[in-house]
Image (cartoon, rainbow, N blue to C red; front, side, top):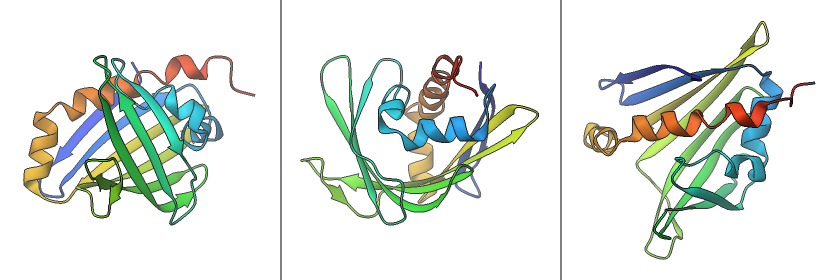
Length: 163
């Protein structure tokens, strides 16, 4: 299992999930930068993802939706705040309205950090919550399990992909 650690810091309003992969930083970065590859892992196994807009440049937005087993679509928007390929990505979740359009100021931000040592890449995803209530609510809704299941889908995508 790729996930090696989950750390919840209520005082700092963060949850950090760390996973290790037999890959290099550039390969893991491709999984974020290429929307077709991102679609293959950025959702729990019970859902599928579709990225309709995706550009990793500061100020850009990424639009996607997840389709559940019942066919219901859950929309999401990311506002890209920082990009340092292939090591760091910071994005802000924008809230969405009833039609799936972005409404600035969502409840969370994520910082993705990718590092490599001896051919093993470590990817940490730190989620920053707006307040304690939203953090507790997301944890109660199963965010840790969902993110763990999501990251555990990366390994099969890496097979034979290293140069």
